[in-house]
Length: 504
Image 1 (cartoon, helix red, strand yellow):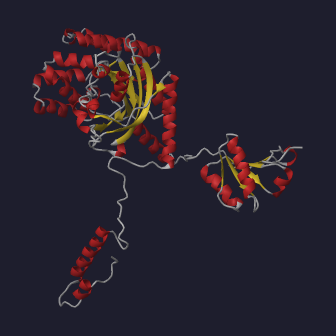
Image 2 (image 1 turned 45 degrees about the vertical axis):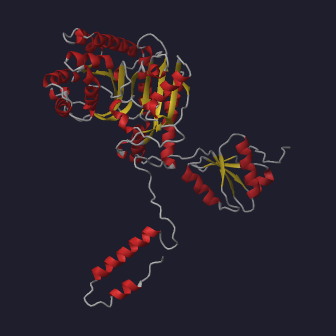
Image 3 (image 1 turned 30 degrees about the vertical axis):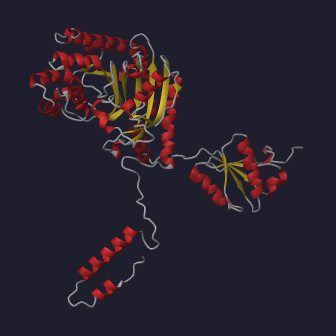
């Protein structure tokens, strides 16, 4: 239905006292009707947008992503990891009950062929299922793939519903804290290599948290829910966290205050030694075991030269249910901004966290949940938050007005005269066959200037120019795009045989 002055609209003009606003209202209704039925030709009008919490990536953004992936994969391989892949969806029962309160964020799929399926929430649970299913008890692997969370997205902070995770895990029975220290070393190497700015790696231990909750008077059945509240300390002030513990989760004020004294503590090996002598903490065997391992961890990190960025932080909780031992999280920091904390209250200036970019820990019981005989495979791993890292690198590139190459073409095959299409295609084919990244313009007779301009815009460093004289001499003239210097020239010409030619 085309929109023309319909009889209804035309008739309105003949009514006495009709206003322009009333006519406009009728026109608006007709336009709305037109949009609903799809325009002049009856075609459906698509809403051109990506789904909530997802995004497209243009070539410039993908070039930055590939650089980040290359750095991360290079580090994983340097540490001897193999790679695997698993399906993007799992049986729903595989994922259910592994993520605590975050289980509500799992995407469930419609029943397909009698199987209840869900999109994977992370790469760790599928990895544990893979180990149990294939009876693997020893592997060092990395896995880079998309995961899905039905979360409230915050796109500007790199928080999406579909996003990549980059995981490194060590499975197997080893002496305490050696694999754990290597995972932290990997985080240290990757964040240093990406040059994102200053960062801190916070470490704690689930056993220390559980022991702390026990000695502070938290009932056993409230450990996990109180733990998930403590995990919000990086986003909420202590007063709000305390209020949630007491008012929403029914914890006594006395227990909450005792927890508050502990979660304010930060340090290194010295703090672990001090807590081992603490009157309350020393009453918990599991807390003491965790504190002893933290001491051992720091001794290995000293050998790995990674202690400069690592801090033992009792407020770190990480909410996932499957962690059994050490847990850690890396955050980027913005120096010189005072924040309300124990240090700030003492008058010291503290760096402010601008977001978690990596996290992980030990999960010794997860594989056993899938094994028919309950056989455990000790595991420890780390996940790199690629989306937040990418958001930061993208912002840095924009701020620096940095020109990002989106292709890796090394040579543009160009012609100086007309009617040289066949020669150009033959030469570019020879370059491709030799493993050289090359390109040619898809025109029979392109102007030399437009070919050179394409090189400058695309960052192609060299142009191989063919002309009548070059064809007679059996050579190719190479021009360096940046300096406009040409090689070969004069008596120094190096003969480059063209396809079908033979050198005499």
